[in-house]
Length: 162
Image (cartoon, rainbow, N blue to C red):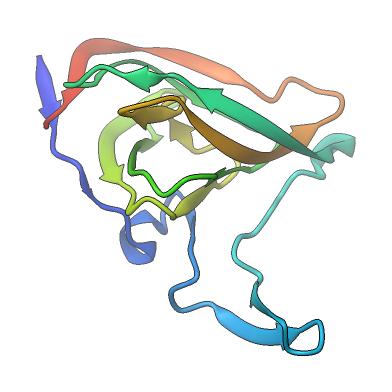
């Protein structure tokens, strides 16, 4: 079985796959008569292809047993997909560049807890990998006509190192 060692989730390391959604380094502006700080334009939402529309969902992810075993990758050819955790708890993010219509070399990241991710359209990624307990995420996704999901089983067993 192949093992992936997760690396810290940083904007630079994750850039080929999308956006890291975090307040560090974000443009800040006071709003609402100074009672609120707005962290502005944190991700590039891309859902309008072929008449798509924006969806806001709540996903409730079941915790994965460790070491986490990976079996399937997916991608969304018509729109980006953003995940925003509702609690401060690390989770794994696994992505791959495209290799002739299937996932290429896998990369694993671990969030710092509050970081979200926005997968760019067509980026291979593993479904949610919550750790330790049931976790809720707000998900900004694409709705509308067209098939916006491709799944691909992994050809070999892969796990994430503890």
